[in-house]
Length: 320
Image (cartoon, rainbow, N blue to C red; front, side, top):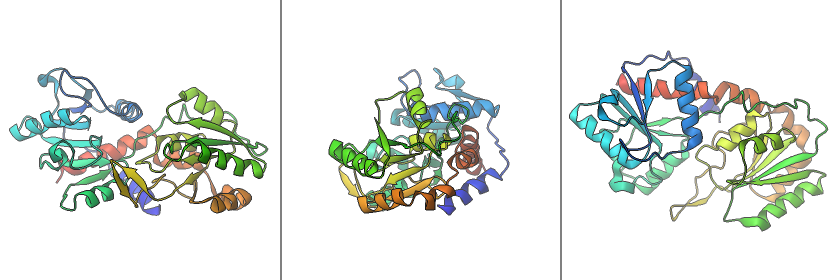
């Protein structure tokens, strides 16, 4: 995990210099429907506005498209932008992270030479791509989205006496029996679990629960980034992340996945089986004092930091 922090620091020490007149962000073709991950777009658009970067989002006509284009989602939008790049209409074209799951989708459009960089929120999805298609040659930029640290701010700074633990459930294939087993292990050691399930809660509800919790247990087989984890960390709640190391992705089993690619000892610990979970719960005082998850987010994963990384990657493309 030290490599990730070093990468972020290196990018942040580079001045944000760009040569584009205007950056266009696309999550759909001109005049078409918009796609993309709402939290990713919220972070990017907020960060660009805060940095006073000249940009527009999903313009309706070609005359409004800037000389640099970032296609965050939608392969039809990418196909349009590739045409603009071929004709010389735009100078810079980058894309991702919400374009394809596999590099072979949409006639392998992401392998088009006009696409100068593909953004991925972490490294392991790109390693998976190379396993799917060993011939792939693509310029990769690691760009995780940020979180709003002002919203995700704890109102209860001292939870030393709290016995409440969040159990965050996203491992659908493992099901309710698995969730119940995790909760029983926590109860055995005197903790009171609160379960929430991915896709069934609102932001305020999530925030209110995190304000009660001493730590959280996350159950998901794989995450390309894990924004819910970052929101949890911003609330200064460390995480114990189940990390089985394999997942079924688009019908293929891959053994190099991570359930929390940006987890560090400042934000929590991994576990693979119930023995490891029990050890971490019993030995809370050995790992918990090392955790400063909110400070880690403030240094590595706010909207501002994320946008700085995004712009520095475009700067690298422009100066090649």
